[in-house]
Image (tube, rainbow, N blue to C red; front, side, top):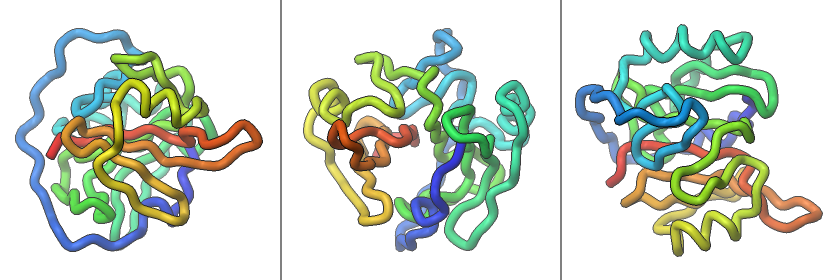
Length: 170
């Protein structure tokens, strides 16, 4: 999974704490549940438990900067990133997953069946008008009450979801 570092390095002022990890109800292994999980990677789980699960998607690399911390599968369109710090929206709980991101089109949202690479319009039809946005490199739209973020890119086919992420709703 390759997400430009600029996406992950924008500063924010608010720091939130995630509650203790609670297992998500049974789900398909490739389901994106806004506010909860992407596949087996759950918001609130210990990052040390998430890291070994990432091996199933290939190589795993640490991601460390002042505004972001976690692990990523670095190949494009494969796997996930699990973060315990994402300052762009004020998430910082060392050792606990606060955000899961993917650009892997094998993962799809429930509801809607939307995925990375799909049209932004499909996400808007299912989830409604977004509540927050940031940009410009790359643009990000969020549905904070649902715990869903989409990183937006322009292609010849229009605006698309380059990556999809989940975090605890706020």
